[in-house]
Image (cartoon, rainbow, N blue to C red):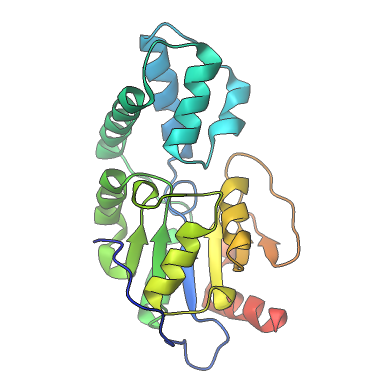
Length: 233
């Protein structure tokens, strides 16, 4: 699956203001935010450095360039960003090769969206090599397209990935529901003008205009998402 984007069209979800659902991956659909931190701890331990637990909230949800760059600067590790990125991706791939738990409600939500023909995209700050591995588990048929963090010039917290996903599906960003688990992802989605459902994974997220906070994907279904769009109108 690629992130090739066609021209903006007029595709809609009949009978609803909701045109598409755009979903984050790590911590939203798959329970992997902890995996990333564990791998970061292991990689930097091998380099002779101990990561401060408080840094976890700094690196969660962001692109690898930001998180790895921060950890290199914070620890003073003698390694380049490119080198550590390879080590982190390899370590993460090993982890998900052993187990890839889905978040509660994720499989049901994806099946429901697919059954009703709702255009859906996977939008992640993770690299393409990681996304494709996860898609094998989630089922690529559940997504019209996917956007990877290493395929955009500016990834989250910039709006670019979500704007690109909306354009690829041929929908209006303002009529897209985005499901995210971190402040970084929420910031990107809101900057793109989307309606946001936040399901906090590591750090709390406060409700706000155009943002609804729930405790689990088990609270989210198609009726819920359509209801949010109707209220917005």
